[in-house]
Length: 187
Image (tube, helix red, strand yellow):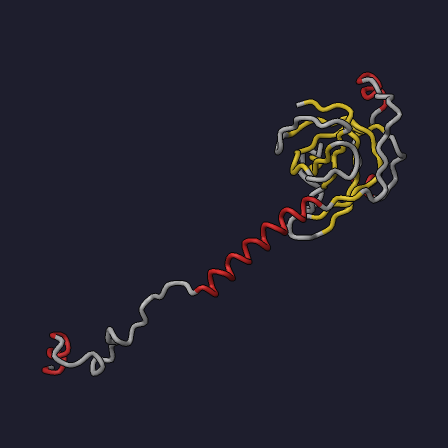
């Protein structure tokens, strides 16, 4: 009992109590120059990946329709099909086939592979029960003129199938997706 009382009052050294002395504790140290340089290199590499990833776009087999004949909106109402992502990804559409769909706009690609501006978008399902798969249905919208589009907007797109485009994500993954030349967009 006496030992317990003495320990409680701190009469024995810390080592005898099974504790740690102040000299045993490691004091926090500042970052070394090597660590600072390593972090700076990592940040530069990350920024480079982001810039490089959004700049690498290529036309896998997309050919912009440049005949100057823009279909009228009434033609879209009469002839355009609801966009079938699976059919487009498999290349089952004819070049120039008119389609309509809802899309959520994503990133504007830095260097367009076709047309004046390319925007990656997600095709929204018209099925009320939700998406048919977990995988997102990405496409590239090809604008023949530089339009002002609000990123992350949801729009109705009327356009023509022109093939597929390839782009790289910020982390370096390559995607080949259907490309639609945009003729009309509505909010």
